[in-house]
Image (cartoon, rainbow, N blue to C red; front, side, top):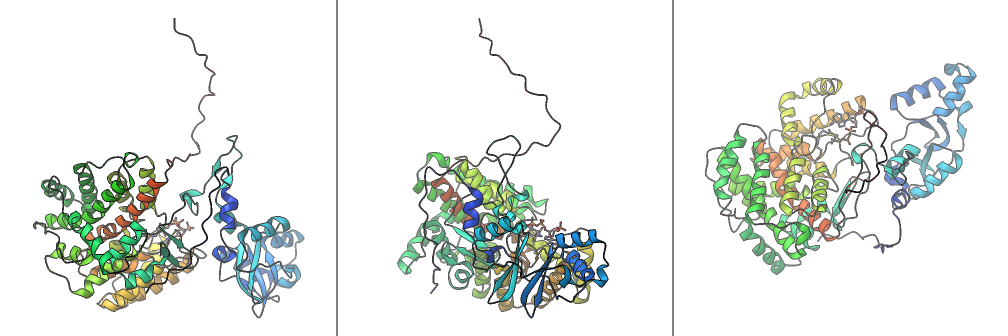
Length: 545
Ligand code: ACO
């Protein structure tokens, strides 16, 4: 039994309210959501030279002075500037002489508005976060600005708001599909813990939850959903003859399968005469979305087999999503534990907040375009190595490292020469990615030659990144163990990102349905930074004679 966690109370929209992005966003969160932890600390007897060098190394603007875990003072960059101006010797001066004693603190449960007000009122830049008298974190003005994200810009364009690069932290819509809580390492589909769903439910159950808002309550509802999906898995007649050509075009390149999927989905949408989302009712849009999701695994498997010179295999009427997917690839009914491994990976990756491909799907839907157009665009966004293209690269990295001894120098060299370690880091998670933690348990359950080595490499990467990129909070993301799991389940590397697409398509479509149900075209602005154009010359309309 999966227990839903309580939903926040629904807010009644006020039709007359103008959006006040900063205040509504800040009010919705607590200090625990944004604070940094662990905190850089010092004792009051440490020297200022020592404290300053540690602040520099940790790239932080303050150090909290503690006595047995209890904050008794704070030393900030500002104190160091004042000290430098006084011209004393930092190696002979104690922290206690320049720190601010008994600093203001906040509790982790305090609202961000409260933290914001304290910083603004007192002119502080950092406040220690204290629970039961013990230091548990620190929240800075920068954390709050990052979380508020939308700042008024005084550039003469009244009402303009500026968002940070990469739209980090910006809330652009309200959704009931799911959410990611980066500081807690938690994500959910509707009101259910996503990892628990992956542990206990079938993919079809979760699919129904995302499309229709509820898990099936029993066999009858489950069967009804399967009956609806089963015929839609078959590739439409008009598309079948195109697949060999699409597969042949992709054979020449590495990423051929995903590119082929993009073309094939486009052909399915066209063959079924999908109409613009603006022009169809909710039931028709749901039908279109269901068809795209159902046929996607069939298209991927068919393109793969054709690229290997093999004939496509029809869907197996008695197998579920993952088992049928593996069956259509190999022609054999898969062993249950392998099918379950792939299914758990697929459930884990169905949806994940406003990631790049989901956002792309929503932007395209916001124009009123059809479901096919939105999914094709989303596949394009997913194909990038910074998003969906990482799992095969993560496995390539394990191969390149080769032996445990080589891990540390290999990773250090890669990062020092500006490389990115594939399968690590995440925009939202600043702690363990729960998908990665879960995939690691799936990998352990499945066993195999790569698991122990992958765990060693994971530990080394986290240590090296903490050393070379301090304060960035870089941990394994879903892609790292995904490659290990898919490899163990017999999927070839060129299938990794398409397999990601085979489940994320369900999340895209749930978002497409939601966007369409309450739509306003997504049309932001950019700041022009090129050479200045000539001043506009007022024109006077000349009446034609
Ligand atoms: N390896 C080395 N350094 C990294 C990594 C990494 N994997 N990830 C982030 N960093 C560093 C950056 O170099 C940067 O350092 P700097 O401050 O010295 O410039 C800092 O951490 C912040 O990096 P950003 O690019 O600003 O982080 P962002 O949130 O924009 O990017 C991303 C997130 C794209 C996932 C990034 O961590 C990355 O490139 N990871 C590797 C690719 C990957 O695994 N992608 C799959 C993501 S999961 C998914 O999409 C399903």
